[in-house]
Length: 428
Image 1: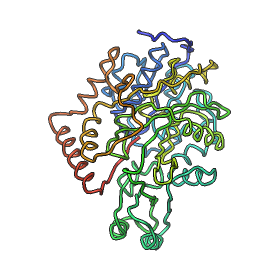
Image 2: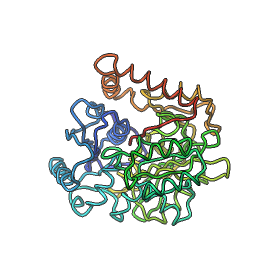
Image 3: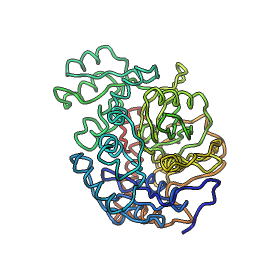
Image 4: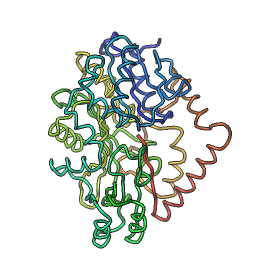
C-alpha cells in the first residue's frame, strides 16, 4: 500500500467509515475520502450501493459494506444496520457522512451509535435544522448572517399574496433537505420568471406547499463562493478553506464541476463566527453567493457533512477536512498552515457539459486565477485508477443512451442560459 509522506502521524489503528444514505453511486467525494485517509495507512470502509461502484473499486478500500438504501427508510432501522456494520468492523471507526440523511441520522442517534463509532457530538437537532432551507434561514436571521430574502408559504393564499407583491424572478426550493428523495415539490432549484408562472406551478403544490420562495440573485451580479472547514468540540476551526466556484452542473446551482482555492479572509471570519454562535462541531460545506449589488456575502446552503469537492482544499501541511477530523477525534494535533491558494478541482464527467453551457452564457468569475498552481481531479489518480474506469463504465452505461442523455441535457442547459429560464436540479 502506497503511503503519503507527511509531517504528521495519524492513528492507523482507527479506521474510517464512509456513510451514504441513498442511491447515488457516482459520488467522487466518497472516493476522495477513501484516498485521503487510505494514503496515510488508515483502514477505510465504505457503504456502497453495490460491488461495482467507483468507491468499491478503490485500492485504498479495506472493506465494503453493500447496503442499498433510498433515503426513505425508518431512521431507527438505519441506525440498527449501521451498528451491525460497526460490529463487523470490530473496532471504533470514525464516521464520515457524505449526505444530509447520514449526517442527520448520526446526530439524532448519537447516543445509540456512540459506543461503536467516533464522531463529533453536537445538539441532536442541529444537523436537521441546518440541512433545512427554512431552518438555515431562521438561524441566519437569528445570528445576523446575510441570506437571500425568503418566504415560507403555508397555503395557496399565501402564494397568491406573495405573487402580488414579490419582485420577480424568484426561485422555489423544497423546504426540507430530504424531500428530493421522498416527496419533491419542485425539481431542485427552480427559477420562476413571473407571477403567472408561479401561480401555475403552485396548482400542483397542494394545500400546504412544502416549498420556500427566495430572492433571485442574478448570476451576472453574483459570484459563487464555497467554504469547507472542520470545527472541534468547542466550535473552533482547526482547518478552514475558501474557494470560488467557476462552473457547476446543472449550471449555476448544481454540483461543483470546477473550482479554485482563493483566499478570502472576510468570508473565512464570517463562517467561523457563525459556526461558533450556533455551536456546530464537525465537517461543513457552505455555499455563499456574493451579491455585487449590495456587497454582501449571502449564505445559500449549509451542508453539515463532507462536501463532494473537499479535495480541492489542502493546506501546506497536507491537511484536508477529512484528515483534520480523523486527527482530532483520535486525539492527535491538527497541523496549522496556509491553504494552497490557486489549486483547481475538476470533476471530469460533468465539467465538459458545464464548460459548454457557461461558454454560451458568457458567465465569468473575476476572482478565479488565470492559471492554476495545481489540479486535483475528482476521479483520475495515478495511484488508484480503478475508480476512474468504473465511473466511466457506469457513466457511459450499456451503450450510447447515457451519452445521448448528456448531450440532451447540455442542449437544454444552453437553451435555458439563453432564455434565462433555467430549472436546475441538485444532489448531495
